[in-house]
Structure formats: structure tokens, C-alpha cells
Amino acid sequence: MNELAGQLNENIKSGNEHVYDMLSTLGKEIYFPKEGILSQSAEAAAHAKKYNATIGIATEKGVPMHLGVIQDKLSAFHPRDLYGYAPPAGKPELRTVWAQKMLRENPSLEGKSISNPIVTNALTHGLSIVADLFAEQGDAVIYPDKNWENYELTFGIRRHSETVNYPLFTENYKFNSAGLTDALLAQKDKGKAIVLLNFPNNPTGYTPSREEGEEIVAAILKAAEAGINVVVVSDDAYFGLFFEDSLKESLFGQLANLHPRVLAIKIDGATKEEFVWGFRVGFITYASENKELLAALEQKTLGIIRATISSGPHPSQTFVLEALKAPEFSAQKEEKFQIMKGRANTVKTLLDSGKYGDDVWTYYPFNSGYFMCLKLHTVSAEALRLHLIHNYGLGTIALGETDLRIAFSCIEEENLEDLFDLVYSGIRDLEKA
Image (cartoon, rainbow, N blue to C red; front, side, top):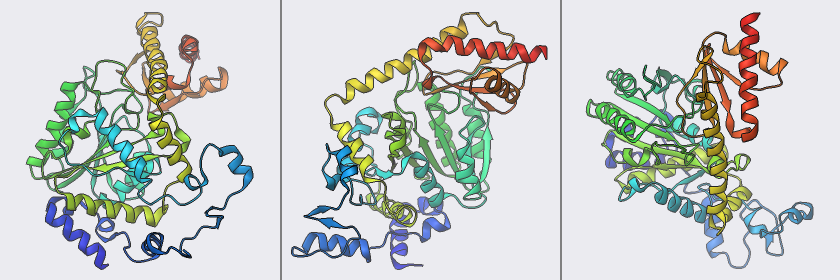
């Protein structure tokens, strides 16, 4: 094992031996090189005042070389904020500004010890970093039966972990904290579990209430007290889009430093929060009371980044940073939030109006995010999906036998009634066939 990796492992082990035990084989072996091109280039940048012939970019007249056909379109930004490599951890000021935003929006983090957010190439990249660092073949990765399909690729296919699902809802359509608890305690013999919490949930658009959130935290704590090491990941892709009475913070704040056997990790990003999906700017943040442990996890995270993408895109980090600092940012974001809330409320009003009866579908609770899900009573979701797209020009997502996901996020409010009329008509068509 590399000497640097060994030293990082010792720092983690001395800070919290349970976190060390959570690491995968790759997680234990990975490190960020202290000697090499990056470190020598950094030293040269600080001390080589005459010529710096280290970094692998081209320069011209003291700035990164660039083409006019590109810079002309981006003239509001200086070439140094666009063309050079961003640091592997991301632009320092962006990390600081995002940390400030995170603390402002999550008061439960007050007084908690967390790392500085590290920039990822959006949220999928952050999740894959977690998988690389902590998921080993056969490890249990626990998440509900209604989930984002990429979890299986990221943790199951890439890392050969074992997927453990539990029903998201109880019979009364409350969050199934008992199911989460049972899934966790079933890992007693393994002594380790990775838990993925995604709120607002994709595909249902559900965020737990404050009471349900406390039950989730209690389930994690119960597993830890039973001797299970728990890596708990808050996938906060749709954070902030809370339209009704629900949690308004990430559970990361309550999970941070909860118990020595609990490692809380937050995955979030500008991708959906700031409506910049294609910019691919996300963040990964760790919680621990031990600063050396946090520093070691950061170095291992940078090792994964260096070994995969080297560093994230510089222009999009600049764009997001400038937006976050802009005086108009909050007002513009609030305007978009109200549009999204209006669409969600319109959908709920339509479904509760009695117009469609209650024989063809019910809907799963939704109070946040981009989506809602219908539970179909009389036809197959896949059959309906195909019928709608080929006969009505309407695209939806079929999930399993009964569930149809509809993204109200991309439908104008005035068109939502027509959309659900078409879904209803499609069901009636299939019933007659």
C-alpha cells in the first residue's frame, strides 16, 4: 500500500476506527498524490516568478490561450476563470460560498463539525465517489422500493453491493420508518450498511414530515447502537423545492455527528437547486467531530477525482459562483420556486377535484420536488406508457406494474389539466380493448 494511503488510513483510524472499518478496499488504498505534477505545479505557481514551465496548458500574453470564437460568446468572464484547470477540489471561493449557503439553509448544522464541500461533476459523480470509497462486494445498500434507477448502476453494478429495498410508504401513506429500521437491523451480522436517503424523493416527490424525519434519525441511531456501522447518504438533488408542510432542511444536519458508528454524507448541487442541469456542478460534504478524519476523507475523495475525471469543468463553476454572489439571485430563484409550487398545487387540485373518480388511480403523497406518481388500478403502467406516447403524443415514465411517474416540472401550469385528461382517456381506451 502506498505510504500516503497508509498515513490517511491511520488518521481516519485514530479519529474514528468505525469510519475506517466502513472504507472499501479501494477506499483504503486510494490517496491524493503529494508529489507529482500537481504538487510541483502548485509549488512553481507560488515561487517561480520568472518562468513557469510546469502546468499542461498553453498561455499567451499572461492568460490562458483561447479562441476568439469561444471568448466572444463568453466575454463577460475573464479567460483565467474559464480555460485553465479548476483545482481537483473545485474553485475555493465556490466551495466557501456553497458552504455558507448550506449552513444558512440548514440551521440544524449550527455547531456541527463538517468538511468544506468538495466540488463534484454533479450528483451522480458524488454518489459514485461514495460508492468507490465505502461500498464493497456484498455490502448492503438500503433504499426504498420507489427510487432512482441509477442507484443500482452506481452501487450494485459498479461495486457489486447488495440492494436491500423496503416499502417507501406504510398502508396509510406515511414514511415507512419501521421498514427502514428492519432493513438496517437485518445487517447485524454484516456489521455495516449504506443507507441512501433521497428527499424530495424521485420518483414520488415526497418529503417526510418533521416527525417522520425524527423517526428516520432514530432508525439510524438504533442500528448504530446495535453495533452496525452506517454510512448514511443524504441525496439532496431536489433540495429547497418544498411546497407544503414537510421537512425544510436536509436530514444531514440531524445525522451529522449523531453517533461514532454513523458517517453522515451530503450530496447536493446547483444542478437542480439553481436550475442549471447541464452545468454539472455538485458537492460532497462529510460530517465528523474529528478534523484530521475529515481532512483524510477529503484527500481520499480528491484521489478518486484525480483518478477518474482529474477535475471538474471550470466554466460552469465560474457561472454558478457568479450567480450565487449576484444581488438578484434570491429573487430570481424565488420566482422559479413559485412557478414550480404552482404546478404542484394545480396537479393536486386536479386530482382531488373528483373529475377522474377514484376507480382508475390513486396518487402517492407528494409535497416537493419535480415529480408525482400515479398508482394505476386497472391497467399496466407500461401498457399505458406505450399507448400514451404512440396515440396521444404524451411521454411518461412507467415504474413497475402499477406506477406512472409524471414530471410536472416540465409542463406549463395551464397545460396540466389537458395532460391528466389524456392520461385518463388512455386508461379508458385500454380498459375497452
